[in-house]
Length: 474
Image: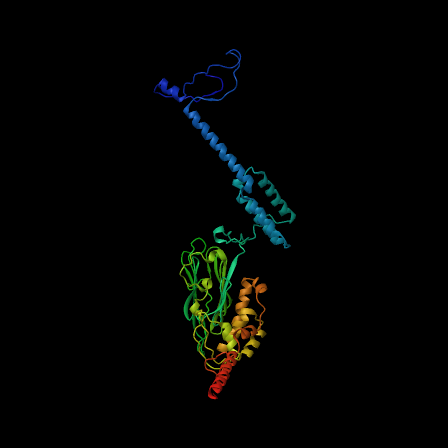
């Protein structure tokens, strides 16, 4: 047999076919020498596999070597499971002076290492950690016969990326609804609307939120939020496949979802927090980084939602009426600026038709509270801008000072959810601009005609009298 040949003798009772054997490599002929020098000289070292079974063993050997190398690399990278033992020990012993607690921690550390003994045999770092654990026991003079250990919490499981909305997304939008009712949309529009009955606030791939507005007791036209429904749509990976429903209605602000739960999902991805029982709840939908705040003040509610901008329109229907997204329909809008101007002068009921653009001018009824008094109350509540104007509007139309508290809560929630709003909010606390814009009113006239048109009427009357006089003297 040639030099360097790997032989695997095979004994068979049946004589093998020489051709088959040769094809399989059982009978390997020495290769012709083509090197330098005579054929009888020394041959270069080589490895020759002369059987099928030899090839099989070679590949098995190569495979086992590759597995061993990979296992070694894993051990070097992961510390064969001992790295977590040392991290937990170092973290928990920091700041502890109690001798008994320290010794229990050392024993816990040592037990953690022993549990990995089978995986770490021959691993140098493992042996070093075992010696370190023994030296720590000697350092604290621990009783080796004591077997007590320190229970250590491993903490919650890490939240997978699918259920952890990226914190670096800076673009959030806020929608607020409160009072009679006043709306701040996701698009930074500020409106006062009628919207009596049930209306959708938001309906997308993640949430369905509906609001019901009913007439305020003791008034003719004022409406306010009497019911809110929040439906968080199913998410099997983060919460559950089932929808979660929260329902609030007059004199009922529950502290749980309808199924009695307050936390849904392995990672607390959906949680209802009762901040002030019966008065203030928050719904945190963490996998979409969305917060819903609902308060009950008096008989009515305030509502706020803060949501990532790029998620708001996902699944929105093109023909939907989502108030937070599209605002109130034109036919439901109230020109609150003109109403406030009229309330300065008018104390009688005076109904006017819709304006040319379709915007309603709410009937100017006798103020429940004089506008000047309402302004004083709202200023003392430190309200400014749209929230100040909404407060005055609600007080003169309802006389219920709970609406002033509702405006305060609405602005507090808005600033809490979006702190930048405090810097961008108008500091306006005067209605003089609206008074000048819409003129003064003669409220002795049932149609509440602007009094700045009366001089023109007098002019035409005088002119008519002069013309009549001239014609009659001819």
